[in-house]
Image 1 (cartoon, rainbow, N blue to C red):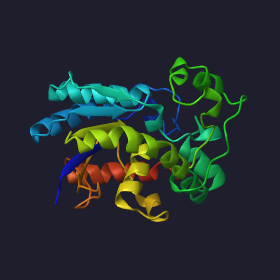
Image 2 (cartoon, helix red, strand yellow; image 1 turned 180 degrees about the vertical axis):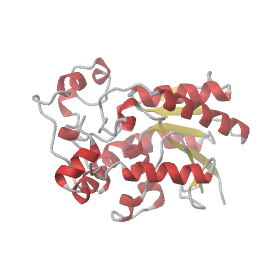
Image 3 (cartoon, rainbow, N blue to C red; image 1 turned 60 degrees about the horizontal axis):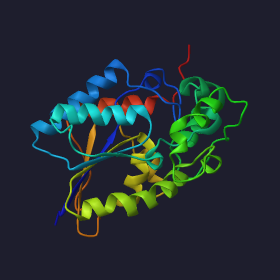
Length: 257
């Protein structure tokens, strides 16, 4: 029997989603379309009668901005929003800033799919010569983390995302759920996929085929042991959701000129 409701949300489209680039830990605001997605998401949730008690976000602007817009559309601006780097997008290392389709042309679609979607393959790490290294690691937000800046990742597999996310889930998020609070996690494609893998017991192989489009809320109904009692629900117009999933999956395909 369903005891708790948990909502996961991949932020609305960001500027680099639009450009099909690996954004990762580079801070980006939402695109105009992303703002619309977030507002539409909030309106949908309000129309369906859902209410949240607390929201968790990463410390990246696109995740926080999405949460704000959703709450504004729901008339819930007053509820707590709690931020942690542990909900950040996966750290794509030296791939940050690169265009996925160009990389597929260069390295092959299979290699890019492995880098993007596999569970335990870590891309090459970022180093000081990378054009975005200093922008990330000199950012003041990373002084607020619960680990020293030099211990923060330089690249991550999805498995490593789950490893850094789980202590936060267990110690901070789960107690809120157990209080009977309805929780929204407004985060990123890979932090949400990692959490889905954990909650739904998805295999290392099958997680590669789990795709979350931007701005589409995912409802999980959980039992007292926080195990799903039914399949996850992607809320909204199902035809539009399937088209959005295909668009995300096609990002890693080469565009032959």
